[in-house]
Image 1 (cartoon, rainbow, N blue to C red):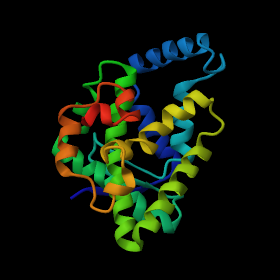
Image 2 (image 1 turned 90 degrees about the vertical axis):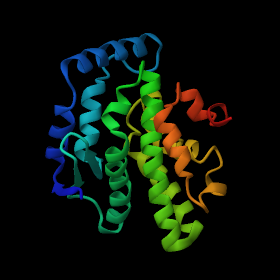
Image 3 (image 1 turned 30 degrees about the vertical axis):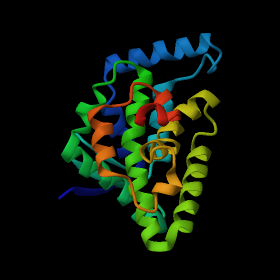
Image 4 (image 1 turned 120 degrees about the horizontal axis):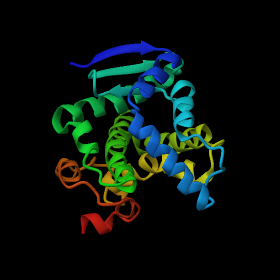
Amino acid sequence: PVAVEVVDGATARKDFEADIDDAEREEAKHTRDAWVHLGLVPPATDLVAAQLDLAETDVLGYYHSGSKTFRLLDHVPELEIRSVMAHELTHALEDQHYDLAAVQKRATNEDQAIAIRAVIEGSAMVSTLAMLRRQGGIGRAREEAARTGQARAKTVQKAPTFVQMRLLLPYTLGFSFLLRGKPWEFLFDGVRLADVDKAYAQVPYSTREILHPEQYWE
């Protein structure tokens, strides 16, 4: 069983902030400086503050692996609650099987960290879309995928384009990666459990494998 709590945006912000240690804050500054030199973000960009702002105002729910608790934000529209539950409880179930914190620590660089996050978020997206397919058919799943993508894009639209893509990639391409690059063909039968096991046991080396799933699966 997974503990469930309904919280407000301020509580969500505190939870996300508590998970960011001093080393990560310092690393975020170096990352920002590198991106500034490459012309990817404005000099005044604060990556940590931007992440916390999103947590407070736009996150709908999150599974906190430290406390093993699923927290639902109190501003979630009623029609979206089931989708949020399906997504976050997939994280909870996979945490019990694979230990998500340990999996994420296997990243050797920032790019691989995003690739691993794509596996985690992609698996939850597959579960959510599969649930919707069972309820309303493949058309409903397609509509929800499009709506979710548009909603996430709107959420981060104030961020620099490079940051937008970095935040959206795990959700928009993660589920396609787990479905071997053929999301609508495989969504009829769901993801292969053996593929989920492999993706967690042998995490992708880089986001190139997320963008080009055949390089990982073949």
